[in-house]
Length: 314
Image (tube, rainbow, N blue to C red):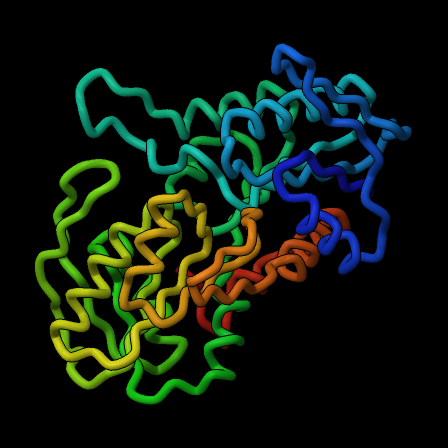
């Protein structure tokens, strides 16, 4: 087994290698002055089972091209099997034609991964689970829930209600409420545009309760901050937000600084600089990904990684 990483999230790749007990593979991934990506694999991979760790965090296109070129280099170097490990799968929100004359970019990325040489994909908390069906190669879809559940259990939050900040995340919120033995509520919202949402109504009892909002992804934090304000208006006490992929831009950071969210709980699927003025807890999913990689290499079952307390995750 050999593990390589592009420039997207080297610290996560190193943690995964530490968990498995192997060295991170040596490779050069750099750019020419005109912006073209150059890749050189610095060690022999002939006949190897290779895993390339590369979440598509911003700049998404740059990191995707690095992944494609790395896999092409590995395929031409006679690697036996190449698994693309995308802890965060970019373009997942473009998974259907919701307007005339728009692409289904999540499907395009799936096609490009296969064309570049991927024999298998390992990813985590897809924005839409049906994206697995865009591939004709095996896809292992993990959930960050076990790592987040352990952290929340230790906090022992009383009077907890799990809230989905939009109707689309209800299935995930229901799974968290079942795991934590908590209540369930929904914030019904309408979206003004790509960066602004208008929270409309709360369905469920939140007055006097501690709130845990769960979502798979936040970038501008518009949904989370608007939902948190509405929940506070309805009498919620403490408001925590739990997001698998916090791909925060400047607008999102500013909104979080000015929001009523007491703590943002997220994972290290994407690399972020230190953010001042926001209470962010970052949990590592390196052990979960490392265990999945180890089992895939040994052709063992990964089913138990999709379960928590005997319950199958969403």
